Image (tube, rainbow, N blue to C red; front, side, top):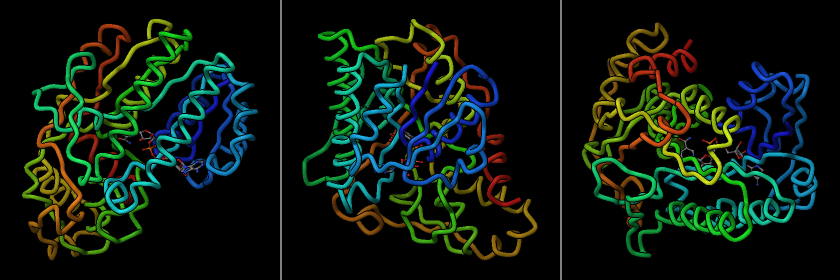
Length: 335
Ligand code: NAD
């Protein structure tokens, strides 16, 4: 099987490449990205070819690879809330426009597409658990520019779904719920908002800065370890029953408020010799979202996945609990 991974040099892409190369000797990977930093250790592997292509500038080159693959993972996107509010058109251009071209090529060349939707498509849905086919996708007013990411993903979900019906496109949409692990973000950048929440807190600790809780940190999320997410993706690749399905991929047992998360991370950080002294001086402080992200930010209080469908159809279950997830992630960054 020839698998094309666009955005292979990112967090999910790098782990997916690593797993496939470790376990599936007869699958070939064509990896595309503008950066290979996170996959440098794989560049000389058998069955692995890396192409440095900017999908916004050189789509023709990418299209050649689509023609030659069996399955395409379009993972290139901007997935950082601060950029949704500061540069929404950049998000739209990459997350929506460039991926729409990949969807159209997948239809044209009759390729299977496994597309990363997101838990954010549910927006401010008030369901206690989000279900793929019954929960509403609820976003705020246009002035809340933060929703451009959610809307871009939702629109692509709808386009892919419609091509499945009209053209028989073979697709699977998977919705990650806060996947966490090694290589998530580069924590050396110390600016607030430059990373996703866990890596932002780790970055603050590394630089001896206070941890800011936006709007009190009472928001609840369910955190999922990357190896559990990759297990689900492998099951999707292997399982024809995954065709024309949407799967939430999250760990509802790892529900945690952002405030609890900050406390846990500070507590766990005491275990590392290099951090112990810094941690004593770090405080958890409150800020509001307008101050931290700007006025066009808005967020949902509770985002928990139902995973019944992935359990039933894929036979998938997340295994890594919250403490283990944080330990493995922090060991990567601090040992
Ligand atoms: P990531 O930011 O780590 O990886 C994205 C990759 O895309 C990067 O390696 C980047 O260099 C590459 N890229 C950016 N612009 C490019 C361009 N013009 N041409 C080629 N490559 C380019 O993101 P991730 O966490 O690995 O997420 C992968 C996908 O999963 C994204 O679509 C994201 O929206 C989705 N997703 C992730 C999560 C999560 O928890 N990590 C949650 C929901 C959805």
